[in-house]
Length: 275
Image (tube, rainbow, N blue to C red; front, side, top):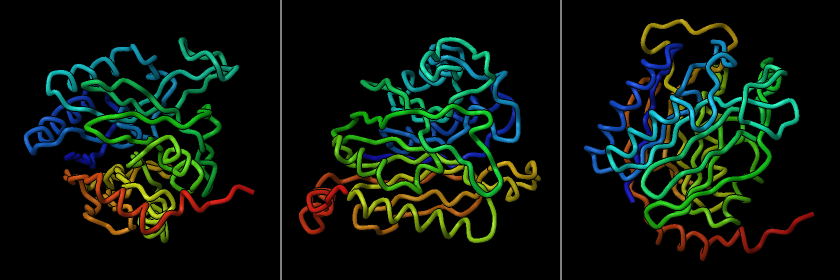
């Protein structure tokens, strides 16, 4: 299966961001991809208000993503924001409590699901939990003969989600991110992507927002707006390809035989013990 990671830099305007998604999805399709992955916060970049643009999964913005996926015959995974809930249960309407959910939409031929970010980024002086309700469960989907697990940004620091996805059958874990910049942060992103691949013996498709500074844009102070370095990592922890900080499109061909080989040679999933 051929996949593409679209390292974009989203902004405040939803329509402009949708146009970027459509352009990059077209490029991915032209390059032979069966699926294109976009970063966290593709709907609107962090550093902007989120509550006023959060939409239910049948809203105009996700419907636009579905239209792109259907017209091109390609699976699209993209980060958006859906309404939160004071009870953490009902996501059908905007919450009185003023929070959203950090959601990944996966849609396309034979695929329709979503994942709400479980681990909220309350770290490095940023409190995502001030504005975001957490998700509660892992999510996987099937496409092109593979099973994919979903994860968002800070989730990459928590191995249990990746092994849980693998236990649900995942051959690959998709991580959509808007990684915060700072000393050592690119190194951590690279290290964590490789580690999670080894933990779960899955491919890791790590797609991040590009670094606004590469385009001469000064990001809002403290907002996690991206560092780039999207990468595809093999189940053996080998980086198969990686982008730099700027926008770009990365292609990779996934091979189920490689996952099988990794699990035969390195049966960490079979050998693990729960304590």
